[in-house]
Length: 334
Image: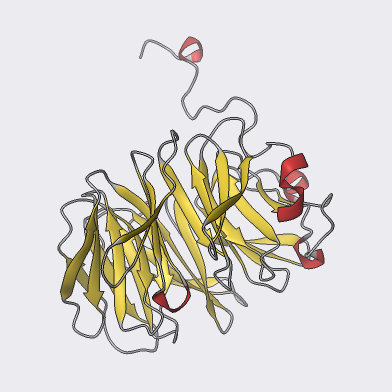
């Protein structure tokens, strides 16, 4: 459940960004960890939480979008006052942000963990732990399709720049490429060996970055699968990636609470920031200007840190102890 209304009054400074290095923003009010965050460039944001809710943040306050029957793992903007979310209830939901009403897209047989919209807004892709990729028409073009081929849970999806192809990452350790029009699998881009949790495509499909269960953090040429860079450190697993809108920087979040920021021009490490005293970093996004990073993790609050102030920022994202199990001393033998 979310925090009480008095606590849910949020501190939201997104409308003021880009901000001075000393400024930051906190999105406070969820009653569970924040699994996803998406900024919209106009002071609004979406958050998805273990509390079964999607937060729609505007004018310094959240509107709670209720409809999922379990934890929400993904939330993205669709444009024209719409958003989409996916959750542990196996559903994808399309939201009318003006009314708060939603429509469920059903058919997955496992939790929906990630979503992506095609650049032209025609398609929505969903990654599910049922081992399939869902492909849903957004313009009233018929029923959704389910793309099968992965041998394990699908963890992430991303459309090519022209929207004709789709990339998917899965627990079987592969990244695969699909033809959107036909739904056929085109090829296996790479076989990492360990499960791949997250992927990100650079502008114009110039690069493809991915993060894996074993801590693998690599950048590939998406056309050939050739490795361009390897940023693997002794941190695992890699859980989140996000590129700036212009693709000039890539943020990488891991299970130990760190956010690494890479300059994609020369692939140098420009920041390596401990965002959480206790991991993980599940959610990442950037402001439109690319000067501040939004992140979510085991805390009920999501944060936005100006890039220039990361070295002086407090690691607040996962501070304190957190448990989702009852204390055994308080339980009866029954």
